[in-house]
Image (tube, rainbow, N blue to C red; front, side):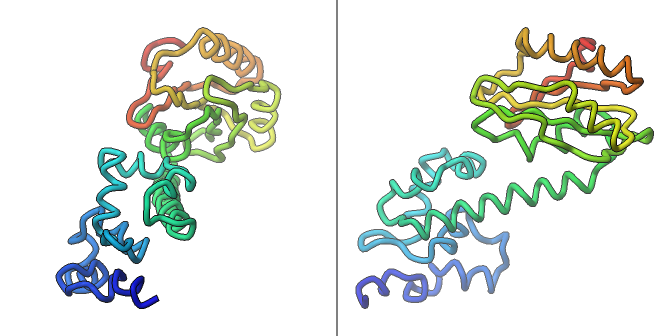
Amino acid sequence: MEENNSFSIKNWNEDDRPREKMLLKGRVALSDAELVAILIGSGSRNESAVSLSQRILASVDNNLSELGRLSIAALMEFKGIGEAKAISIAAATELGRRRRTGEALERKKITSSNSVFEFIQPIIGELPHEEFWILYLNNSNKVIRNVQLSKGGITGTVVDVRLAFKEALQIGAVGIILAHNHPSGTLKPSQADIQLTKKLKIAGDSLDIKVLDHLIITEKAYFSFADENML
């Protein structure tokens, strides 16, 4: 027990203590590795928490989004990371994702394809599987509700057109925006994407509910059917 305690943050030199550094200098003064070190609390017999955190971050090219994609099992593959520490890292990255989602929800008026991207990317942009969402808008282009219509595998989802417009009629939406992610990172719409967009647009026209756009979302970019004059 004493041997393990010697590697906790409390027993480091003061200059190496991330917690104390945060108290003295503020959150922004800490490196990503130091913040992760606070989460895990201690390293292993031969490695400090900061060094272990640096090694974990190096494995994802110091990309925090990629860190958030690591499963608990993948994190536990690092020597010095047990289940509790892996869960702490996963929980922190999930909180970060939810914070981004919350910030997006505060900007609910849709003014462009980019505003749609900012709204929906935190929700589906980093998922390892494909999801299809619909944003329901009122006549001021404000989002009334955003709904996951389907969830699929890596290559696609199945979308029920009737469910899409049932929700629109129930909440009084006058317009909808379609969005789904491509885990592969490609922004090129598939033939199935194009056909589904046409099918939903025809259904919307018959109900006087406009399909305003369809976005394909990846981690850092998007493709807009409206911007490309494909609606």
